[in-house]
Image (tube, rainbow, N blue to C red; front, top):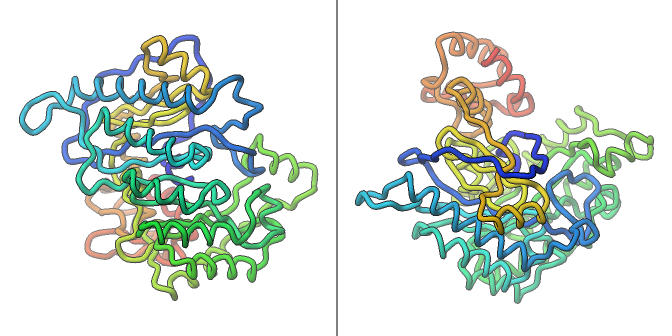
Length: 412
């Protein structure tokens, strides 16, 4: 999920013709990643508002056609970046790729051969750095020891598994279809296949969840031997099945106080087991941080490929058309499938930099703040929400619960 939250939300409605990107000049030294969006899901989870499609919603689109279109987009992307970004020898070349993240949707529905073809398409048009991090998300129900073996052989270095909870009644509220124990088996299978870096996603604050439900879920993730856990408070998004159930009174709305309590429980449990928080919603063992997401949060650049994917290079952010059919048609016409774009001015870039970097364990450098913002920083220091550590503002435990308040105070 985290790869999609890095970009601001935009209206990405379909267009009859693609928007035209300006020249994209990558910033020297900035990490460069590729995000690939796989829009296919077997079923739709009740809380999910991502750009995903079940078979009945695809209108004839299929994974084979999507892969053809993806190859075309990556080719056009490399050509566009090659034209404006010389390499160290002065030759035209797209930036070397530090990280690849295949998200969705459900990438594991493509199977080992399909995901291998995706990574091969990236390599066909871009050069991966020797130590590149290559992640795919996976639904535990569509994984197997054979799949993990194929992924490791193909060059994937990291797997992110959606577990959410081990409590059956919590999974039922979320409309998750996997059995409670399957994500844990999948994590162990991935380890046997040679994956050193494995993430498990958890959701806390689901109506009907108890402290013990979350405690058992966290302990299960730790016992599975993963080196990374992402924990997200349940958000009821407009237009989802869960939102309709809440509106009808069938399910209680999530409670902010319960969210805070559960976050503290999650953090305490993980910290006691050797995990450190490095972003407000992410914990890892040493060396297990997700480098791709760190690129989003810490000033990196990336090309977003696939239906609805967002990209950001230089001062330009853009997003693709959403439906797989419209996406494929644009590329069949030889056009990048861009729905719209925006050019970020210095003020907007600064606001987003503060919003994202203040959430990191490394903290927000005072040097990036204006004189007025540094003065307002004294307020959040006095309130016990941040501490000043080696010239950086670092959230306290209480500050992590009120990170949005910290941002508003600094930028007000």
